[in-house]
Length: 131
Image (cartoon, rainbow, N blue to C red; front, side, top):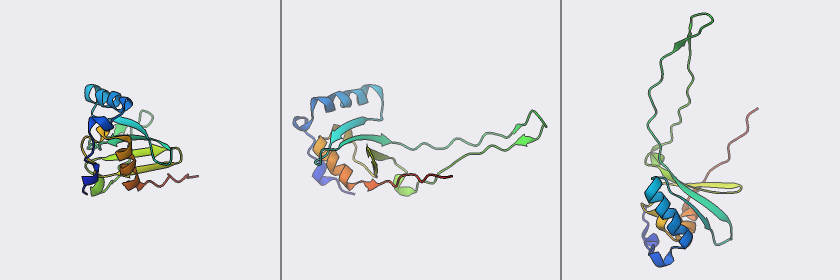
C-alpha cells in the first residue's frame, strides 16, 4: 500500500493538541492515541494496535474437590496475515475501522491526513449478540 499522498506532515500542519499527543507518545509509550475531526464533523479516536505472541498454555491444574485435572479454556483468534504487523484502529460512536498496514509516524500527521487514512480503513462489523 502506498502512502504517497500522506507525505505532507510538516509541523505547520500539526495542531498544538497533536504536538501534545506526539510528545506523550514519545515519552510514555509506543502506542499513540489521537483524537481528530473528519470533514463531516465527526470526532474520531485513533490508536495503533500491535498483536503479541500468545503465551504457551498453562498446565492443567488438579481440581481440589476430586483431584482430577481441570481443563483450561483459552481463546485464540487467527487474525490473518494482513494484521500480523499491527493496525490502526479508528473509532467514532457507532462505527469502527481498521487500517493495515499503516505508515510509521502516523501520530504526527495532520487531522486532514488522519481523516484520509480513516476513509481508507476497512469497516469493522459490530460484534453479534449471542443468547
